[in-house]
Amino acid sequence: MSRLEQLEGDAWRDFVGAPVAVLMLGKSDCASCQRWTEELGEALRDEAFWPQVRFGKITLDQRGLTSFKRENGWLADVDALPFNVIYKGGERVKTFPGSGISRLDNRLKNVTGE
Image (cartoon, rainbow, N blue to C red):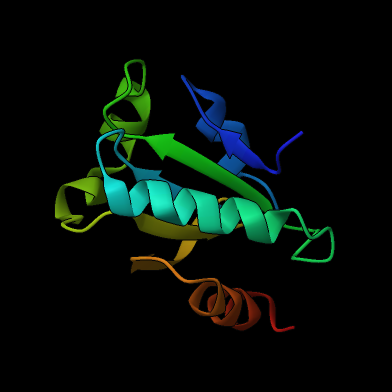
């Protein structure tokens, strides 16, 4: 089972409420998004890579995400994909465009204090 959850419908609600969660936003025709998905998936094969953090992906051009789009008005300001959001206790605490395991690792360390 992959640690990178593909979120559909209203599954995002439970996901963002986790103690710490990383949400990757992309589109199905985005080559950079696909590369980041593969890079992140590879990192997540290592059970020691942030085992206490949930990782998920939303494909924005997928049907059934109306509630996510409606309740997250900040999406209108996202101008680069992939886009990553770190949630802590249901609150959006860090965002960054692009990819990179070291970038993600540094931001998670800042958020968690580890």
